[in-house]
Length: 458
View 1: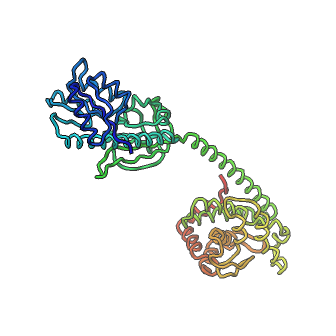
View 2: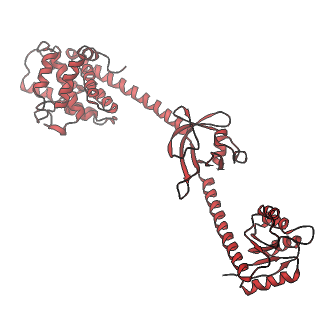
């Protein structure tokens, strides 16, 4: 490890040599002395010492304080003042140069060594701090987000290049100025009330830049605190999400377009099924609407309800496989004919299983004739094995079918249908679904009967 290099600046040659000798005896390297401020500046540049011992009162045109100020600006070398003068005016002048210590003449060797060691330690710590700050600054400049730091007064202390670009501000003009005077952040349609508030939060916001342009941003803010928890300021991170918002808008529009096309296809399929079986015209529409109303009453999510609407609109698509004369037969069906009719959930599933709906539409159609205790078809599923959406369709299907006219019987009426699902709740029908359906009719009879007749997609 190399010895610390110290330059002595003293206009009395004998005193300078004496201090130089003391430094050598202490184990420091003291390569030279300077007898004036002008020579001190030159030797500081040539030698690049670790520390300068500077006499304040120097002969010539430049005193020690003036020389120290130039050395500080040019070379950033720490200075310790050696002086016999400690008046207030001199000390105030000396403070400007940010000295690393003072030593009053005459002094003991031990005092000199203590002062030097303290100054070297302080210099080393400040150098590490500057390196750390440079490292942090470099990291913050290299990231793609806008980073702005403020002090406890809400004044800007740091702004990276991305922040300059995003806010349309100039770093040099912004530093030391109130953040709220440079630009605005709007969250939930309100300008952030107090940029000095020492709390953390994150979310989407609008940045109002220097040109009054509103820019959508992801915005986060975190307090800067010392070890005692005192507020020292805040760090703000902003990310321009204009492109993301445009992409989301385009994606939403694209999804809505696909949704409309899907609805039109479903309606077309529904109409095809109804042309095959004119006696049940409107049945799928009414089942879909009733099933959605039941699902809403039960508190299912909008996404689940959308899936139920799609499946309900074409739940009898498998009847395309059943001959029309069987579907419209006014008398009791034979066992073979009944088996053919009972095949329609499986046929419907086979038709739709290759289509990637956003919901399990094919599975709902496959299971809408399953029953809670395994009495249904085609697979004899029980209880929770049946999709909740299919259990809802099952109840809506029975209520609508019993309420409507069929070739082989007159309409039994809604009250009879509700008695059916109440009597067999837990056996054939999910009790929660059955209760929701009964409650729906009890509370909103007129509304639900009208709702069932509305177009499925509007």
